[in-house]
Image (cartoon, rainbow, N blue to C red; front, side, top):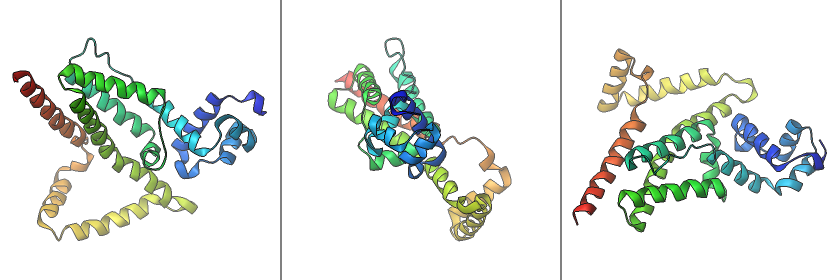
Length: 228
């Protein structure tokens, strides 16, 4: 594909597909060019360099989050929608966790999202400083919960290199880790309970639990502010 027939939008969307499949380590202009049937130099013409491409791709996926209508929703319902929307986006694109720690990321979609969250918490009753703190708390809570899943994706990709059986290697490591954990009473109790109840097959409720506790704290603070 010639340089003039490519568009920045095509490149960014294809970069996201490549990032989803290969992670940040798999993104380079040559691999991207192969997917687009274009020369690597054509990529640079439209997106300058890899850092800028990652920035553009990241802002594009932030745009996938459906923003709640805070004119009609109660603040807590809207906050839950924001948190779940962000979490689900990161689960679809786990490479974003690594990108956040290694690239300068900004753009209109991220700014639109952040501005709405600040508006949401100001409407709830926080002043500007506490609205900033509440928004940051939600962001770090979601990111912290997403790190494990993102790490698993990267680990599985690493373990699968050169045709290795990632599942077998993971099971071997888990067996060794379980043997170590059984030496400690609280971990041993949980291991035995999981084996008896098939606990690990149940849906993971930790995100919902943690978010509820966090928003309960916000709610208590808002009630305190109303009483001042």
